[in-house]
Image 1 (cartoon, one colour):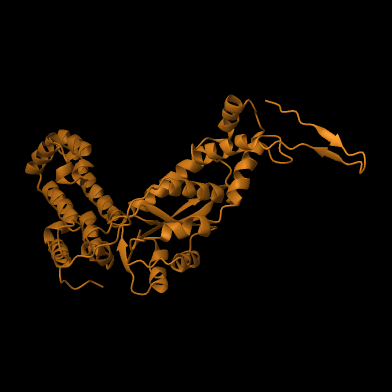
Image 2 (tube, rainbow, N blue to C red):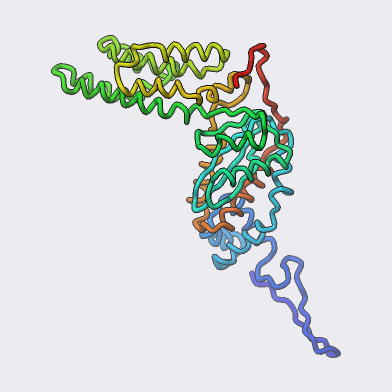
Length: 373
């Protein structure tokens, strides 16, 4: 819809004056309402910039240029102050558990979350994720008043020393998914080796095919198996002692990371696995035992000292997956400004939709047990 306005000329000063409608800013060709709807469509409804033009044509009968719609969004996002508008709010009621991870998309993005309160605390955009960038990122979190008792990370080398430099005395929980990834890989190799042996023998080729179909099922916990899967595993295990040992090792590794135990019980289960010579019949299982011998095991069971400490870095990984999907679908321009503005607006939308839930705090166990170093 076009709105005609009057332009007047002063007879005394010979200057021209135009009446400015309240619905539009001076110098703008579109109403303020259309501009705000365009901004909220991109930020809240995840509309693409290409799709935004069709939406504005349908709702307001205007079809701005793609660059115009792009400028509306980024001009608004440029004005967002992360510390003032989001980070101070996110740091309020911090639980005591910090989860940190990085993702890569033309730039490295460091992300810190509070899993117990389901908040993204802060994000840092940098050229590459290294110890210096991580140090600056964690120092910024400290300046916000965040003092975690536990930090949950994957096994990347940059997390080995920097967190303790920023917060002396902090404890590290190594994500058990990342820690056991090498274990499951070697167990799959052991299963494949057994399958190859069965495929070469007369009369066991059918069992080899069954074992191939069950290779990932054998890496599952008992409670996650169906009755059919349990019966198939039991049938093959009854015929092959090597498969029984592999499955026994898998279940014992799972037992190392169950919550209803103490540190001493976990260390005892680990010792039982390491000292069992039956697991030395294949090189892949030897490598599993060597993985459990490393000092990383102590960091993987830090969660046992707490009631609600997460065992994995899944919370920040979910945030990272969201950002990757957002980048792939909604903004293909990978400039620093584009990535950073999308991150800022997404965080403000999460803040607006967060609600008034009470803050959660990390709860340590009262077992009277010495805390492992």
